[in-house]
Structures are given as structure tokens and as C-alpha cells.
Amino acid sequence: MKRISAISAAILTLSIASITAPLSASELVREFKGSGNSTTAEFTVEAPWILDWRLDSDYEYKIALDIVLIDAVTGQFLGGVKSGTRNNITDRSNGVRLFNTSGRYKLRISSSMARWSIKIEQLSEEEAELYTPRNAN
Image (tube, rainbow, N blue to C red; front, side, top):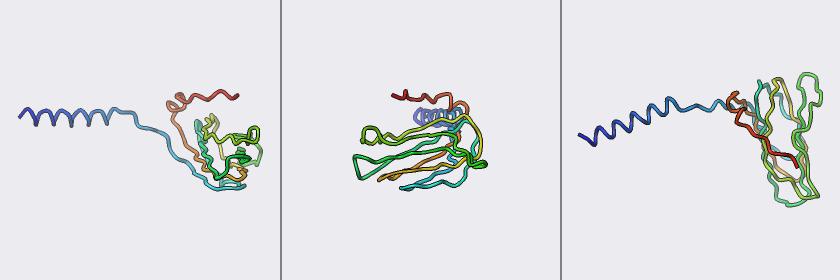
């Protein structure tokens, strides 16, 4: 009888924990993959959101990735998100950048000898508060 009670208690505890555990509000809006140069399809996001990029290559040197944010309505350049190489050695870092503006956007991507993958994810306000940017050197 005690064994059944212990099992019942464990199931009840797990059920309550799953009800009270915070759910991730992060939602994938769009994903883009490729190599070379490309302008993505338009996407619409509400603040806050993140751009998450991954870079891969068969080479160690002189590969590059540049990502530029474009206003999809006006075509206006809004700024660089990620840029290039350092000292002819690839800044192979994968990265994430938080945006606190809403809108319709496109990305202009330029890469040299590299494969890239980019995700646009909608965040909750709570998730955005947990974001801590790295210091740029």
C-alpha cells in the first residue's frame, strides 16, 4: 500500500510541477539557410525578438559573414547585425542579437566560403529581460 501511495505522490508532484513550470514563449518566426549572397523573404515581428545566426565552413581563413537589417516597407538600411572577419581569421562565432523594435524586415546576407543558418525568434518580455549581451572588443 505504501508503494502505491509513493507512486501516486510522485505522479501528483510531477503533474503539479508541469502545471506551474513556466512555459517558453519563444516562437520561431522564420528560418533562413544558405551560402553566398542573399536577400531573405520578408518577415514580421513584434518587439522583443532575436536574430540567432550560425556559421560553418570547410575553411579556416578568409571566410566572412555580413548580415544587414532592411526595412521591408521602405527598403531602408537599418544597420549591420554581424560583420566579417578579423585579421584574416574568421570570426566564426555563432551569435544572437536582441531587437526591441517591431516591424516588417528583410535581411541582406553576404558570405564568402561559408554556410549560414539564421533564425528569427519572437520572445516574451520575461525572456528578453534574461538576455545579456557580450561586450564587443
